Length: 237
Figure 1 (cartoon, rainbow, N blue to C red):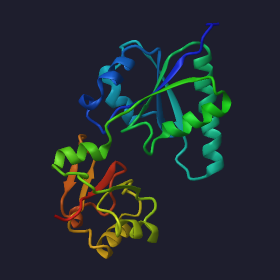
Figure 2 (cartoon, helix red, strand yellow):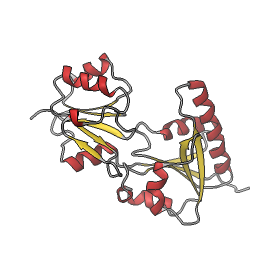
Figure 3 (cartoon, rainbow, N blue to C red):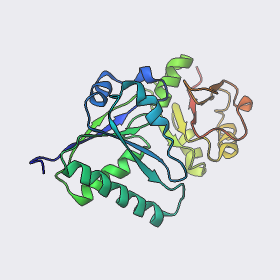
Figure 4 (cartoon, one colour):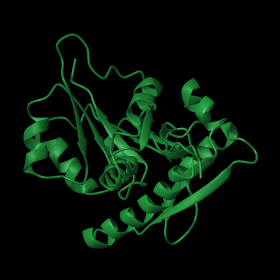
């Protein structure tokens, strides 16, 4: 048994293009003992793993961590505890592990849950976060959209909450980004109309991947967007 614990790295692999990983992320991936990839319990496919693959050692061990696609908090908590114990055992063996996550590890990411659950098991684990380029940063660059400047503010919101609260926020910010627009898309479009933000909104789906969609007219977006979809809503100028 090694005298010291291994390190867990939360690696942000960016929005989809393998070239958008940071230099630090590629260095970690080229050195770790184990790569951890989250996937649905229904299959073992991981988009984050496919993005990171070109930067991984050819013989590196990949451990799949399965998570059920459910909103049942009890079921999800049990899955997190189960997977956290798997990671904890690897770290106790002195293994260095890289947990892959789309975008940035600390923004709407599964890594945040793993980090919190691991720390509840043992606060002595060495956890290092390697930030990644977010989908909205990449789409802003792709569309030439200024996210914020001077004294402007920027709202980062989730489409899961297409409520009056979201309407109120959109009414009082300069610029906004709404992630997870695969949820409640019709309601989100109504909110944009009600807050006079529809005209400036840009819809982006599967950026840098096959099937990419960039719609500067929200009405041109699919009625049921893909899971990897978001909107940028710049202030009118």
